[in-house]
Length: 508
Image (cartoon, rainbow, N blue to C red; front, side, top):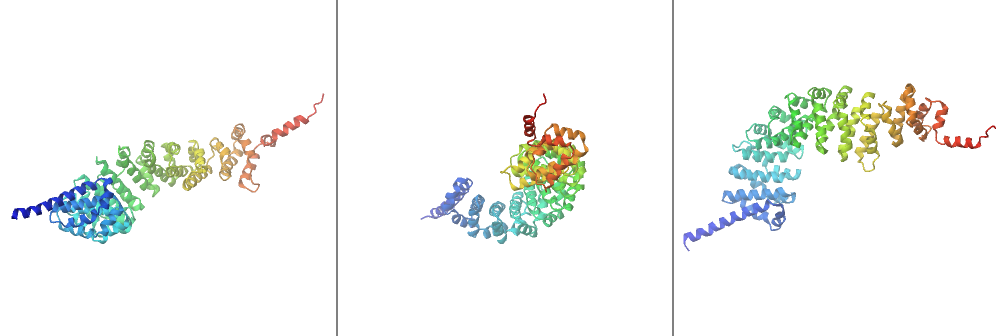
């Protein structure tokens, strides 16, 4: 056999390996093929190809493994049990940029599924190798490494701390300053994943100078980048007053308010979330948002949004209103109650309804004027309905009840309370009747209207325990009227009158 024929055997073997690994990589990109590949033992066949002498075969084998591990946690577990990770980590330091990208993709695909799998990636020494990749010249390698580090950090504070301890944060901050948009996005996302867990982790990101660089990009035209920028800033701002103030000091207001009108709903939602996280801390921060036109902008945003996109805006109004009478009045003046009333009638999901009920309660609890603004929006019957509805979640029932109670205890606008006389259960009714008992003794016009609208008649029909607050309130109301009027509207009085008519003997 000639030398050429011998070499041809090796060429054929190499060609077959390349064809096999490329075909597997392509098949692994389609979910319907995954189970068949798994049952055929693809993992054990790909592992030796990671050590192949041909670089393209190595890279394609890593790509195929990444696609498989990305599919579900069982396959990611198989990568870990197959002892593949140490080889990948070793290759991150030794191989070319194409392989590094593929290896980082596998690490990310394994780490994304659970804290346990992410910990397995950490335990095989991946963090140091990934951090070194952040210093590579090639932006694709940096991006792949940043993505893997973010997926490790997102699970919990311990894993996030491990990423910080490996020295990733300053390099991620450098990455957001690079010209490539995709690298900026992934680096900002990674920073967001690190600082979401605790004030200490957020402080680490802040100390690396992240806020100034993130804030500079809030008007960047790229929507996907802005999603990550606002996510990162809100994850920093949520932890403490100091961190929120640092975000505000980067002069993000009023510039970020224009982003509430973006086409991209994730950008809008993340901006509203950032404003919410700042507003919740102190009256001063809420006042700053009001002064920059933030409340009016968020109210418009609630009107233009639906479902979960609406939620951070609704909560933001609740936080602002909770701080003080003046801030709650700013929400009222900007027509916030009207938008919250619309949300309360339109939304179907309990958690959104619960947040809306809570926000309305924060507005209505301050003074009679605040309570009136809530009451005239006709939300009290809807709150009562949500409280009484058997299908409502416990949280929704609790928040609707508290909102009703807080508003009723301040409300002196009687026309808005009357419908509740007919439907409210005793524990709510005592607050409704209590407000009538407060107002009627001092308002003759209200006393007259209370009779003509049927309110007095309804009060006489209420059965109250003689020792209860409800009975006391009813007695106070009755004392506002002549005895014969009270008797006239009492149940059974018309029968008594008819009986007297029948028994009456006319004088002829």
